[in-house]
Length: 291
Length: 122
Image (cartoon, rainbow over all chains, first blue to last red):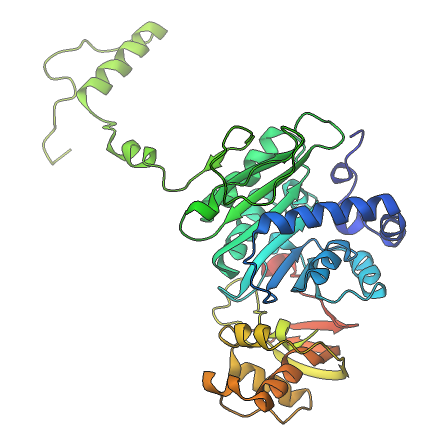
């Protein structure tokens, strides 16, 4: 990508009336958005029981992605920060309810009521500090915490993102984990610069077979849809981050202030050239409570 | 904005402990016909705050919804139709949503509520 929209202006400014119209009248963009939305919906792995679900479309824009949700029979509520884009969505008679809001301020949705959330090409905007009062970390935290709260147990959130770099993707994923999500990244067509697409697949609730990150497309030119057959691990290009890693428990047991640690630190200081008292039998001795 | 969405929204202002439900001030209500889907309604019934829905539908001008509802009433087609109408077919086109705790007003234009918070409310 030669220039990223995120570097030009904040989303509500970049997506003004002109841009909104341009965006929505480009058949190429419409097609791409439809594909991305369909794939996101697929990754959402909603139960195939014919019952319409209540979904969130975060950064719904002009309703292109929402159309895919409606076509699949679901009800949805869309959030976007650009009034121009929402105007276009209204013109196109989007079936979902639209809300003018800033995801970085928190979603303001009641706990446990949403069956799933998708976001197409929107979440990376959170990493920008567009206003002096913006603190990207605080915004990421607000967003993911409020999202985690409003999702029903076992529900998923799938975000198609365009991270600027690896650090940005890790930042986004990090805040998602901190909010309680488990999950990872699915990269479709990782070796093709043009077709490469990244999806963050996040789950709420206990890790189980169904929350193992799904198979990515494009490793062997086969597309997948059923990720219950996750026995075939060969073609995965994903990283699974599980919040129940045993590693965390080990860290707590590490003794930070033992005698060994003190001696090691003193040796380090000596090597640096600092003046350090000699090591004696009194070094790191437990002092009386009075200290 | 349908009452389904209104039933999901809560005031997000910093320091507010109970921002639900947002009080509705009506300026214009539009009725739009939506496909009747009993499965979806039964699914949603458990998640809906029924009392808030009844109050909201009354304010919007629909008084048919009974004050209290038991899950057993979902078997009745009559109740389901009323529930469907209140939840999915009444749209607040123009009006205001008011935070119950702070009184802060969120305008609704063309059916779209403006929930953007000011700097000091975040």
